[in-house]
Length: 430
Image 1: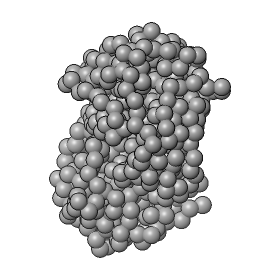
Image 2: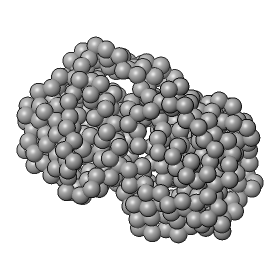
Image 3: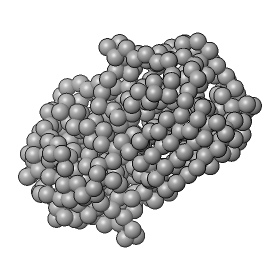
């Protein structure tokens, strides 16, 4: 499916989708419980459906994981059973990494796989950690990539791993470690990238009654802990998705654009508010009400470290292409190991739209003063975040923009194009 976007103005009130990160973790945390948990206002998407399928494969039950569902009910598996079939994680790296550690608690062997993109993503440090915990964890191709074969049961222990590949490895071990016999201590050999995502995990685990520790150079979780079940968990709004709506407002608001569902949480991507303020946007966040209002503003380029906020890079690249001066996105190498190489993808597609960029291994610089966005046919690379970012660029490009692969927004923001259209954007799907 393609999305055709014309130069447009937006205004009014829109609502942020629920957080994908919290929904993944809540479904799995409820799975680790021994009772039934109601998850209110979850994000139902291709990725979170993959996590729900995995929970069922390990012996749980998930009801309500249908489009537009306002509630998911999860009957936990407690201690995971060995799945009767291969666990297909589709395109969801979060699912695969989190449930790889779940598989290490099971008695038998679990086989995990996914689509072509997911089978190219690195899992080596997590596999090595499980091996160090006396579990079995192998890549069938011996390259650290899926398909994976994982088994246990691991009892716990201490492991050491790099922190600059994926914070999801830490999340996976913390969530599984609470259900192990003796718990897991995780020492970090390098600086942790995307650290706020681990804080999301710790915040959610606390809501489920699981205690964790941040020791500065690593994390720990005691074993033998029970996940609280039988209650209700409400998913907060997703700041990664909010970033596209705020970018639309900063670049194309005819009048004020207000985003609802933006209550404070541990999400690192809430940094988008401060970044837009630094760039000169007229923006106001009413934290108690959970609303952010923004109007179209002249923006100036800044330097932004995306080490902790990799999912913001596509949005920030578009903002830089429309800003005056130079926008430098640094500490970006790990952003290359997402659904696609997002650094290279944004460089190529923005250049196709007339932007001037300089790509380095660890950075992306957008020269706003030399950029004039023109409508073009651009490739979303099968990546929801690339698709949404390019659609926002289309709002302020001269002429029509066609984004190929628009259906991939289903991964994290299924109603993205409908939300833009409701705000006044010229959007046609075909």
